[in-house]
Image (cartoon, rainbow, N blue to C red; front, top):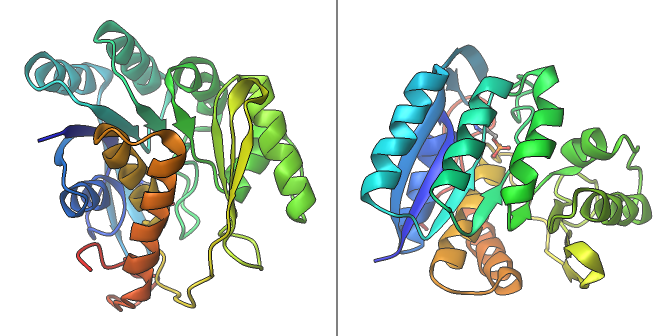
Amino acid sequence: MKKVLTIAGSDSSGGAGVQADLKTMLANGVYGMSAITALTAQNTQGVRMVQEATPEFLAAELDAVLEDIRPDAVKIGMVASPALIHVIAEKLQGYGAEHVVVDPVMVATSGAKLLADDAVEVLVQELFPLAEVITPNIPELSVLTGQEIADEAAFQRAAEHLAAQAGVNVLAKGGHSAGEASDLLVMADGKGEKWYRGTRVENPNTHGTGCTLSSAIAANLAKGFDLAESIGRAKSYLFGALLAKMDLGMGSGPVDHSW
Ligand code: PLP
């Protein structure tokens, strides 16, 4: 059995964060573990309260897991603050973690901020170098590059810029655009690009889609697929979870991880 660790925030409504990650891992045939960076009190309508883990507690979670069950891949989601990012970077380096997928979570689908303003630079400096791939959506790509992204050409330029500047493979997710849900993988060091042309599923219930995709990529990397293939498989899984058209809660509900 392959093992995958998620380092992320808890979503009490079960649609995003650690809960989405663990459901995705189960559905993708790997054993899921978690180190929780923050508790959120939220539902499909929004985030009501956030309680961050202390750096000491997050370090204890990571030591406990990493000393005992070595993960074959790691997914990083909500990391909240610079102090927590330092802990994650130190522990992952110390234990030589492989196949690290970083979802640079900044803002919840509902608009709630999940990353401190002063943490973006630390995320770039300390976690991006450890990542096999980072998975920004359009608003995150815009923050990370300082570029406005109004069309597909600007989207491609921003992804290329980030991959070159940060020296990391970038999967830029186009789901926030008005058109089709096309994603672009730009390999670092000019090693090529690959478009994933997806058909947009008309489903307003998209809470946790970013978490689901990055966890499915990590699960497939753990199973031994290469990066391009892992992304393709993860996109197919998310497509099915959206297509199942589950409709829970009064706001933007979760996708069906069990389809
Ligand atoms: N992580 C946590 C704990 C969250 O609550 C959320 C959104 O609410 C996210 C990550 C990001 O969610 P999404 O996958 O919808 O971008």
